[in-house]
Length: 102
Image 1 (spheres, helix red, strand yellow):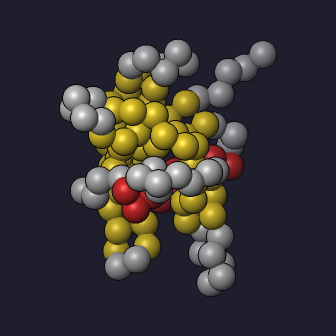
Image 2 (tube, rainbow, N blue to C red):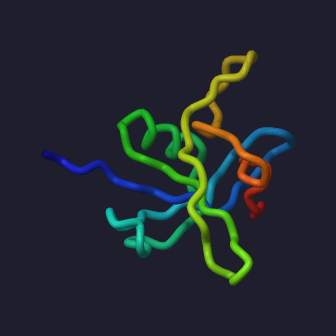
Image 3 (cartoon, rainbow, N blue to C red):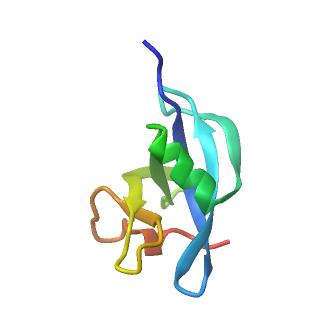
């Protein structure tokens, strides 16, 4: 059985209210370390990874300077019909707008 990739998003770049890039890297399957450090990734590439069935999680800064896993990312389609990112579930302090910007 083929294992799907797991990616982590640590920050987002916006143009106005729209996400245009994510700082995204490849995480090992145990979610313990980076296989590939985060780099700026266009929104279309992030959406392609999701459509291909890969898992993408959010990673929020914690109090000790590390990263804490947050909700999974999914493709969102607002009323205007443009694909964007959304979270599978939202919690206080763990929404897309709470991620750092770059």
